[in-house]
Image (cartoon, rainbow over all chains, first blue to last red; front, side, top):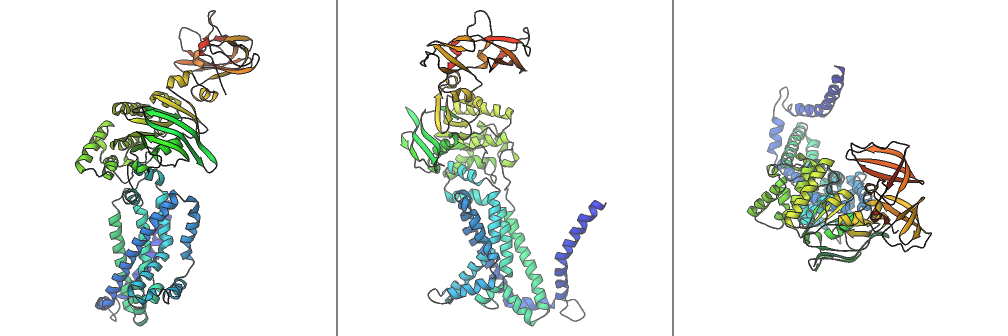
Length: 263
Length: 349
């Protein structure tokens, strides 16, 4: 009996730790009308067009970041695993650097280099979005790197590549048909974290785009002036983020990445 | 006419010589095994044929075409790996049809060819299974079918049975040989298992330290090893130190043994004579080349009995047929054995 008690206690504490703040936020968001529970705060949020546009913008940026990270990291890590194994510790260190560089330092660095001649990338909207995308990629790199690296370590990469080559496959076919499907679960794991980082990222988006374009700066701005709406937005953004993560998981669940081999 | 030629092939990894001056000619449809201990260069040579390793020097010519610089995906050489290397995300049918899909064959052709291949390996009921749902032996059969589906010019097998248990290994060994004979495909098989090499091959290439130690049919390698290394690596061998008496006789302990190979060494010099344990027999008055020793150990192996003798300070193994009408030798008793002079090999270094 006691053996069952302790695991359940720890699980319950974990659930409380995770859900209690969300529950409290949710309850608070329903108290916009004095004395009764109502959806008034949610009505106000939906009436503000910036809520939808900022969330869509951040979602698009998150998906683009995930795509670009995959495009950059999967081939890079494959090459590292296959041909440059000695460089792996160096690249691993570089990939972890974003952990120790605060976003504010990163964004001021960007502005110093890219907001003045000769580059002046921030003069155009597209350029600014590109810079923001690059910043998001840097921030999410440690997570994506770790996930993809773990995925590649879990398969017999060299032999699978050689088997594909002996069957006539070129590199594009190998990446699309062999490597990617076998590390899909790992890539998805990294993608979830990347998605969450981009949706909640404040500093880069605020300094590069201003207050209401991306979701996190919009949330921060609303939070300064109002009480109940930020709570409603937080609950909604949590639900939307979870919804998108579930959709991504559904897309990626039809995978059989169980490693075959001698048994 | 040689179908596959390895001409003065060399491979260096930094300053380490992996393969040194490897020359070999293989005819169409031949089954050749590379046999040798770990690190002898057999897998490196195979990987150079497959295109996974660049040659440091030399040429590989396939059907008259120099393929030394051809990338592996353009060589039309099938390969079966020790670890099977099936694609975990694909079913058995998709694995077997992968090469055909890459080659741009039609769906109907792929389906029909995959069916033929699965029929060949007797796995038609497993098309929708994933590799992790198969046993090791089944996985390796699928890997074989996958490599054969594209009808490659050469089939390479890199220790394909070493991860399997003994019973499956024997069955699959026979299957591989049968399929190879039926399709008439030129095959190179890498192994460190001499029994496997002997059971499968038309010719065996015994390798040591990156060099070819001997090339020959299995019975030639076994019965007439040219070097001490080949003699000791292939099968069990008694190596006895002897002194040259004249061109046709040597002294082993106190006995004089006759040898059929003319000795070129000086009289009185030391040579090494080798004889297989199964070619030593309990001495009869007519049997020449006798040797007496004390029985140290007797191991009953079913069909044979292995006796270890100590004769003139040298350990000698004798394999006797198990005959229920004869008593098994007793430990610490004297025993005299002898052999036909034609079975005594004088080893070169």
